[in-house]
Image 1 (cartoon, rainbow, N blue to C red):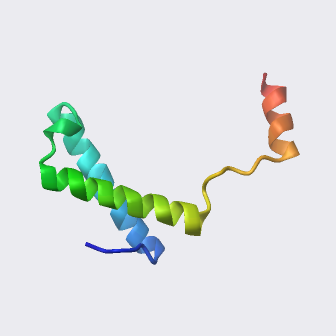
Image 2 (image 1 turned 120 degrees about the vertical axis):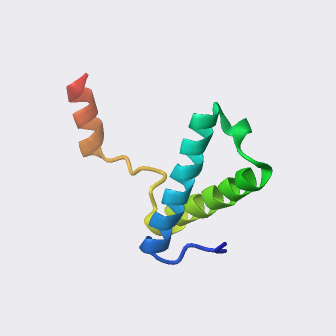
Length: 76
């Protein structure tokens, strides 16, 4: 288990693992169907992904610009 995501390749691998756990939970009827170890690993992977997205990719918060606001108003 990695302790920090350092590259985009690692990020993509972590996202793939997260998606696998989510799919397994869906097929099992919910997250309660995951084994304790799987649930703990999912939590750790999710925290790693969030940290990478927040500090490297800077996904959140989404930047609000005049251009975006005007486009949204025009759509309404």
